[in-house]
Length: 387
Image 1: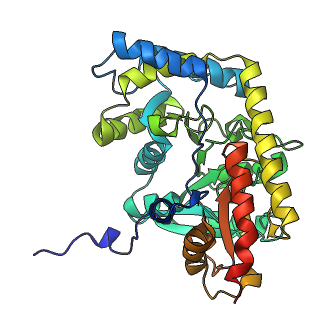
Image 2: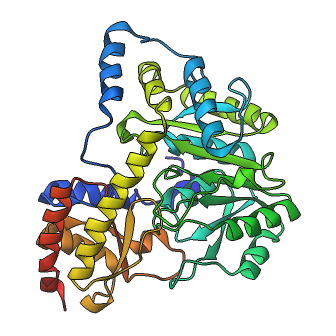
């Protein structure tokens, strides 16, 4: 038999999804894969039930239903002040995962380089390699998740660098990049003529006093920012797989073509139903922030009461917990033991770091109160894992 692709021979399966399978097998509370155990907004599910009877049930326009793109354009203008043309600067994808892949494939040539902050969501490195490009990693400080501007510039100035990937608010760290940090990134992107591909799926889950800034709004960035996002986290519909890309027309023309041949288009009935959510008023987003702030407080206060050390989330819904005290040589075995013996599933932090970091695990708190309290009750038994 002919050898398989060299590009994919070093891949493993997703560690996050692997931990979900382990959680399911042993009946653990799944705080590994980031999806909620509460329902989407009632208005959204009610509209979906109506669409199930009335349609549409056939292909939408490949780059997204017209009314969906128009509603998304209005929402983005409301929150960022940027008006994206629904006809020329928006494409609807099968989740933000496809949005990122289509964007990366539209920008990168084999041999190019892409700058990633470490820790990073595991897909970014895989996406880069699938495009034939090489990741260049810039570490965030383990203390305060800041970055060294000189180290960042050295990375962005390397020959062959084409783009930087920015997850803000960040998975897995919960970091929200400050306006000052984004200004540094923007100035370097302009200086070295790079694209910035953003992942902003947690844009509405930010904890006071932190604020989300769209880097595309900064000077010189609108034409070089490719914004990827989705409806999954904002409306608690991770299974609907509705994502999107926002970009200037010359870039979007290329992304549309890549998207067309990757997936043809997103699900027509789901887009039709989701227009309802895109038209929600500000009270929904205020309530969303309050809801997630409550869940964060429940979970982090519980972790503090248990004497665990962790990073305080600024946004998103993840916590990195320090497991140094438990005496494990690796975090993957710790996570397996925690799922099987304690009944709570987490993700090994090493899957997010380029550096040799194996003393952190990631948990998420997008769960009902009763789920979080039960998880905290089970985590009282973590002492059983000490070696």
